[in-house]
Length: 477
Ligand code: B12
Ligand code: SF4
Image 1 (cartoon, rainbow, N blue to C red):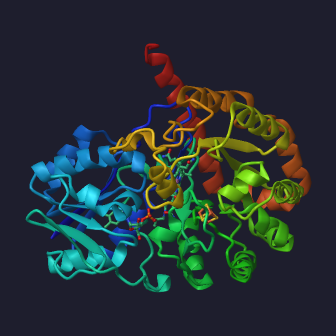
Image 2: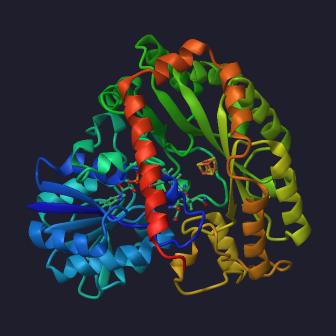
């Protein structure tokens, strides 16, 4: 049996496409591969690095029996279906997994190019599917039988410590050097799945059926030790890294005790920072340097409508605590967070963002992703702009909701205005001085003076030069 796993490209033509700055390894597929490679010859290809014709050729050469395609972003589903068509034309059984197919299995199976959908966590379902060679009786999968769609019962979630570590060795030709932040190598680790909060715009409670699990400190440490051999920067990509402060504290103790001297980035909520400042002090000591926070909005009324369980006061307090500890903060802000918003509300949001001094600010439009309470509301009230599956608009830059007081064009204009008025990373000198002041000199020396970091800087410079030359070669359009 041969299994090919494909990571689709992002079909987004926007000047603020995060792919231009941050390209992360296909962790979901590496998790699936680890679990299946002893029962099938397994390969991973990444369409973000290789074009469709290369992938077509790879399928032709490898001749897989089964092709698994990851489709986490709704805006990428049409592109993922295109890949499924290519695979199907070459005779493979096609399987889609990830957030979009899991939450809309019927929709996705309506495509003639898709045979099977693996819902939610994929490792054990995909393994069983490959072993049996048929979806019949495999928990957690949906498939077609003639014209009928069969949804097998959900699979119980795995004990995360029993899953094998992701197959990073299957990364394709030289791509170890392509993943990262502007070419600087960054690897990804997931330490938990699920989140106990219930924000109206987030689908996590549907995807993980209101559960939360974390891996043991030992299991995560095993993975960090492996990664450290070639890369010293890790993004812990949990949706909400600090759900269990005691557990995070124990993980930090281990990282400090073993002197891993790595640099970590992760996610958190502003109220968690305010409630546990001592934990963030320990995280800083362990090497955490950047935290991503969904700040979402600065109006308490809007935050309440999003059910974020957060206040503006907590946001400003968290920023102060994190800056005093020498953290870089990446904050995301939702424009049009309340359906009753007016242009004056958008103006106010941009104005506050400008003065808040978050280091890296990103803006998203409120988007009703599948499986969210927001989608139910917007659909129920007939406020969806394009009924009927224009999924490519469900990114974060295209208006998808009809607001009573703002036209879609004005909303899009405000989104661009937000990016223009609040620079992505302004005053780098001032920010670097703040970090140097807050962190011990030894902290920086231990993390910067090593071969992996030096190699990373060289790769980043080479990457920048490559981009610069490419831009000069390409005629302006
Ligand atoms: C890291 C991350 C990012 C990274 C990049 C991710 C990447 N792949 O390059 C960054 C920060 C750039 C990012 C950005 C955004 N993200 Co994001 N991101 C995530 C996050 C937190 C983790 C992804 C991950 O690696 N998970 C770990 C792996 C192990 O899990 P997994 O990929 O889900 O895979 C498992 C299953 O899904 C399944 N599976 C997946 N693929 C396959 C394939 C097969 C064949 C099988 C059998 C199974 C299977 O099995 C895997 C193992 O169990 C997810 C949420 C999450 N927890 O997954 C959101 C998530 C994917 N992001 C989301 C969104 C909305 C965005 C943004 C649009 C946010 C915004 N600003 O509004 C942007 C735009 C992205 C872009 N491309 O431009 C949504 C997508 C919702 C949707 N329906 O579209 C998610 C689900 C978050 C959420 N809770 O709502 N994101
Ligand atoms: S937005 Fe963040 S805090 Fe809210 S439910 Fe999703 S992961 Fe949890």
